[in-house]
Length: 132
Image (cartoon, rainbow, N blue to C red):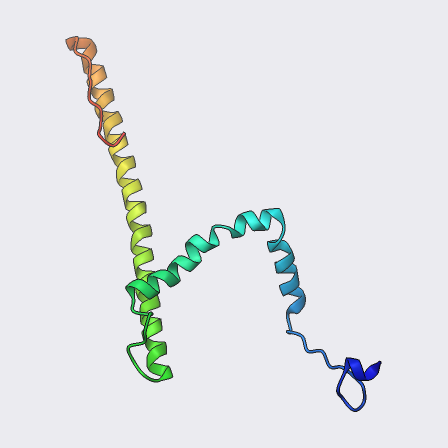
């Protein structure tokens, strides 16, 4: 029976395990719960998307250089480009939101002043901003 379990001379089997294996098992258990599956599902649309962008837009289909250090430099520069593009998109979204809020405040101020003056002149404001 022992000869079937191991090939070592002293009939002991050595099992090696990753140092943080218990934590990895906990993460896997959480990921396989219904909530974990629901939270993990968008990952293929966000994380893998960056690899697709690197492949299609940043030349990661083939390496342009030879040698580990040169290829690593290419990958790091591509990752930096991707991060800058992501930061620019986030800043643009914030700027658009701030601009929309400012226009809305301006619209309300115009509406208040025109409504205040409409009681004296008898005219009603029909100004509607295009972004609403």
